[in-house]
Every structure is written in C-alpha cells, then in structure tokens.
Amino acid sequence: MNAAKCEAPAQTARTDSAAHAPSSRPRHSPLDIFAACRAEGRPAYIAGPMVRYSKLPFRELVRLYNTDLVYSPMILAREFVRNGTARATDFSTNSRDSPLVVQVGASNAQDLVRFVDLIHEHVDAIGLNCGCPIRDQVREGIGAALMSQPENVASMVRAVKEKYGARVLVETKIRIHPDLQETLRWVKLVEEAGVDWITVHGRTRTTRSSQPANWAAIAEVKKAASVPVVANGDCFSLEDARRMARETGCDGVMAVRGILANPALFSGRARPPWGAIEHFFDLAASYGLPFRVAQHHLAQMMEQLVSRRYLREFGDISCWVDMVDWFDERFDLKRRGDVDFGVREEIPWKDEREKRKATREEREEKM
Image (cartoon, rainbow, N blue to C red; front, side, top):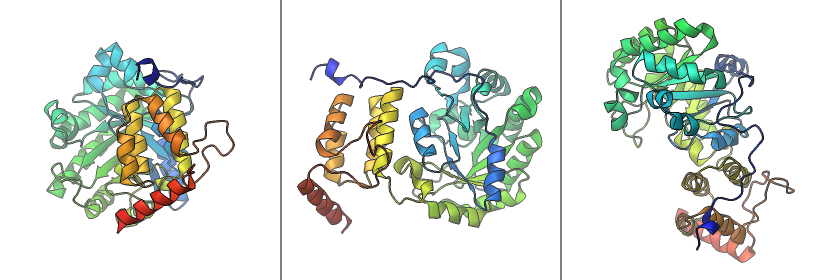
C-alpha cells in the first residue's frame, strides 16, 4: 500500500478548533458543578486524566453521555513553559471544551505559576498531579513524589492563589499513604494553602490496579476534609459510581479505565452504544487524532461489542484508510449528516450471516 493511501482521512476541522481557545470561552466552575449535583442528590460524574487518551476528541465524546467534568492528559509544566513545540502540541481545546480541568505535572511553585499564566484563560481549573506512580515522573519530582512533600505542594497551591485568588481554581490528585494519618496530614496542609478540592485515588503508590481500591480510606479523607473530595478507583459502571458515592460520601466520582472502555458509562449503559463508535470516529478524524491513539480508543470500546477474532483483525490495521475500509466492509458506519448518525445502540452488521457468526463466537468466549 502506498504512503498516500495511508494518510489520515481529510479533516473537516471545526471552525472553532484551535491550539488554544479564545479567552472569551464560557467558564463553568467545577465548584458550581459539585453544588448542582449535590442538589440533585448525586455525585458529579468525572472523566479523569489519561496519558495520550483524554484528548479533545475523547473529552467531547464523553460529554455526550452524562459526564459532568473532564480532565486533560497531564502536561509537564516545565516543558510547556520553555518549549514552543510543547505548547503547540500538548494541549488543544475549543469553545465547547468546558468544563475542563487541565492536569499538570510540576515540582515547584515557579514552574506551576508560569504554567498557569499561559493556560488559565483556556480552562476551568488547574489539577496538580500528586499521585502518579510512574518511575520517570517520580524521578523528576512530580506525581507520586509529591505525596511525601506536602509542604512543597502547599507552597505551589499558595503561590497560584496569591497571584490569582478565586479566579483560578486548583485541585490536587493524590493516592493514599500506607499510614492514613499521613494522608490526613497532607490534606490538612494543602487545604490550609487554599486548594479548592481534592481527588483521592484509593490505592497507595505501590498498590497494583488489580487490587481493589480502598474506598473506606477515601471515606476517612472525606470526613476530615473541609473542601469537596472526589473518589477515584474501580468505577466501571454507573452503579459503581453510585455505590462509591454512598460508601465514601464524596462530592464526585472519577472514572478512568472504566470510561476509556465505555465512554457512555455515566449514562447507565453497560457497554458502549454503536453511536459512540460513530461519534468518536467523526471526532478523531475531524481533529486529526493520531491513528494509533484513535485505534486504541476504538479497540477499547469494541472489546465489549465483538469477538476476539474481530479485535485481532482490527489490531492488524496500520493506517486510517484501511481502518475506514475495515469498518465499512463489516458495518453500516454512518457519517455526520447521515440519518441515524450517532444514535443507534446495537451493532449494525451489514451481513446477517456475519452477525450470527459473531454472536456465536461471542457466546462461546463467555462460556
């Protein structure tokens, strides 16, 4: 196959899509969202930060399915401030991309404030990553390295608040410590510095994702905190979100792995509707999402819809044009403007025999 054929499909970029949104973008305070959801008797439903994956097309997708608040992938403050290429490529948004929290990795107040100077007009809040356990990040003094530096985190929060006050909201996302009293001390120091809310992942820095999240520990943080608290860890369905809110008393529930696999999670659907596939296909092509990133998103969504044979076929695809062909040969994939675009729940197989075969394979895999 020639290189020209493997280029991304022609982009139909939205007129308001740009590297950064205009400063006149609508603003939506996450604190107001927490209050509104509380008045409805439910937690705020939040899509958390994901390296490579919580980019603009995915953020726009999950908002179609009852997600109240969305995070960007983590951006390295120092690189963003110093490098024009990073500023041009690491963050994109538009006037519809709200409410939005931009997550940042920073190790000191100077880098954080400079980052906030550049980005605060384009987002609704700043989220400081204090819990990611990836070794490279910890070596750089960001992420989970900050779990042992509450005074440093407090100084970063305080520096932003001293410059911007209530105009810039600041969140911190942490994991729990092996000794929960250390977590409570951490939270108290950061609260005193002026943090607006705290997200707690109910695992320690060394706890594997295969081990259950400690919701009871999150509940203890919520009891001790004077600011809103968001619970994170093991939210894979709307019922999980409701149960997590009941057991922790938290103001919001954050899904990460669960919403990557099912962007319609907070709408109560047990698996992604076919319409989500069509919407994401349209958004990914419109915004020029890199092929491998788009392929990963679609594979995650289809894992609950088709058998392993189809997933293997899909994983062998190497470019946009072949991916479009693969879908069109098997399914009735609607485009924006077509009747029924983005609204169907079930897979629209083109061949009834193929549908029966796929259903049989899926049933056998579950046995």
